[in-house]
Image (cartoon, rainbow over all chains, first blue to last red; front, side, top):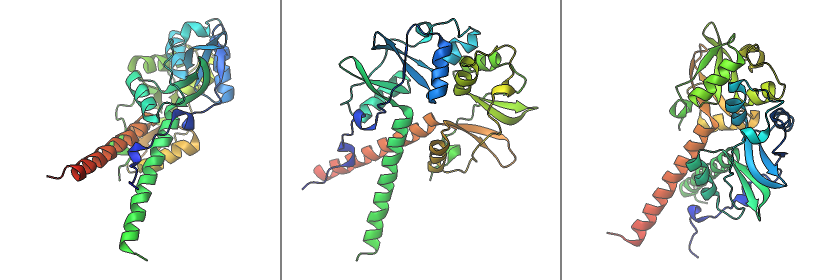
Length: 153
Length: 145
């Protein structure tokens, strides 16, 4: 059997995404959204309108568009600060494709959408861990091979 | 093996601890950065990230013009040295939940910062190199000259 090359492996978005996505409503005050991010220890919320994802609000949006403008988060609504339209990816897409979408669009979070419903999210953290892990496996593999070659049993 | 100094950004922005939160947020926006290192008389003592801005400022509804940087910064600074290995830096990020690591020398001088983006780019680059090597090896096997 021909050996399958590592780069031909086809890990999908579904395999590394987080399925527990926290969302907020588009007409909530930004302060509530920030509290939710703080309490859940997350860096973004998917913004829903009638249960359909319509945008995203990140820590960066809050700094650039609220704090740096000295606006009152108790009055400004999520829909006024969020980034929209959403860039999304399908769960069956390949991990490398997701990584390309993030790099070319300069984004760090990519919601995963199936039949217009939010099913997960993939972040730069997920991708970094994935690539780092692959690299470690690759190095370990090479090490094992050279040990085997040097000390055959 | 590559180290922190090979991938760190050297252009780090700093602000004095008495600067207002509003000024620090303005710097983040102006320079398109996520982190400002906070200094006391020029010596780095803390860090403010986008996360601090969202969690400690926006969520609490603080008055951004009167609150000073020192009230919301994370301190003391937990940094790495320029010789720190990238894998170690990455595992520290994972373990502590940090996305930025200031790089400091033994005297505590700020040299740069390693972000999750830098680490991610490093691994992506390594991956590309590996794929290119594997492809050219395969091409050589298929079409020997």
